[in-house]
Length: 479
Ligand code: NAI
Image (cartoon, rainbow, N blue to C red; front, side, top):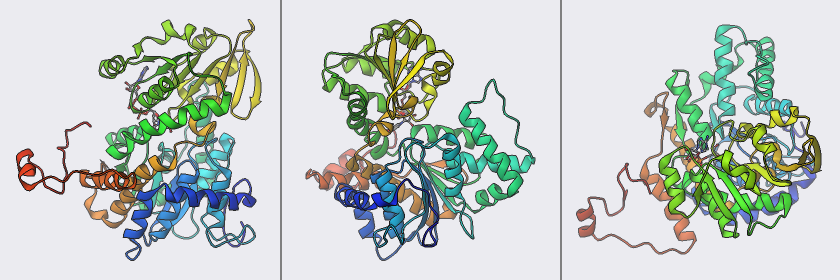
């Protein structure tokens, strides 16, 4: 705590560098800046106390300051132990008008290279406000939502279950021990937060999946907006963002030549498509695994072999998981990999690759540098694992660039305004933003890129059955 502000970041002296990068990013985030202008007088988020859990990067810094300029109070943590950019975190704590000695910004609890214990500590700080509890959540992956809802569930039961050593991941054990402590120290804490929260807006595929599961079980205690499935989010960030940041991570981590190499990408959803395009663009020979015949057929039509991990892993130089599913690469798969082949994950959680199995296997770990480890098996063969199996584009590089995140985060801001200003219009369910708002976000970015839209004539609009001003597509259209 300094100057009355609570925070924990790596180094406040990085704030000036962070501020310079934030200024450059603002120019590349026209959607967020347009929202700041549109709502400058209205300040629709006045009164909102937003607890945010999302990679604390330069782009997120511009999001946070947009929320603040719309009237919100904000507390923030990262949603991944490796994804924080320490200069961005420092700049947000210091704020545009503060100094490292007298920070005047936003309480941030995030630094690059947290332990799991520190990660969940930071999550708790982000959700623990002085005075009244949080009343909005902005989530990426669902950890903040899970903390509140599980906390509430266990408070109702009066007990946190003991950990199951055989089945619980290390991460879940740390999470349960945090809940056990909070149940002892502040009974009713999470129930109070759950009751105060008007809604959550969720950023990513994995978090959205968790939200629909919670809603189906009847445990969703507040409305939710699925930001991921705005077209201007998942069809842009997940695909074009990844197309940029996947090879950025591989290059910064290893600097291995990608051209000519055999690459195996597990999952051909939005993220997998961006991964495949980015590696193929470097001249790699790309193979894809899929469970879904529709996505598999897309991969084939795009010119990529569809194979199984078992049949292809022994031949691959680079293996990337992007399924959002668990148990994709097992220890046996890793042992079958070529010497010094590279293994990384770009899906939200680290359970796509069996890191626990690798750690138990007796393989020797040689850390080349932070987030790059060579694991040497007993037979002398080794593999290079990026970011300990956590999302490598944020662990080894700086995540998606500003322009694409401007699309995603414009949807986030609009979703926050929706749930905060219209609490009576939403039940405890998962919603998507209406199409005209999706088109609004796209229009700003088309204009920023100098694209020129064709205007429908009234006659044409009637002929295809839409309004001259849009929306231009029916709900069932897939883009
Ligand atoms: P998606 O649902 O569009 O794609 C996942 C694909 O994996 C699907 O086509 C599915 O059929 C396939 N799949 C599932 N199980 C599989 C298995 N066992 N073997 C092979 N394929 C399998 O999801 P999306 O949007 O591509 O996201 C994937 C993951 O990436 C999610 O965890 C998401 O949260 C995360 N994400 C990460 C980003 C980053 O910057 N690192 C950005 C956006 C999303």
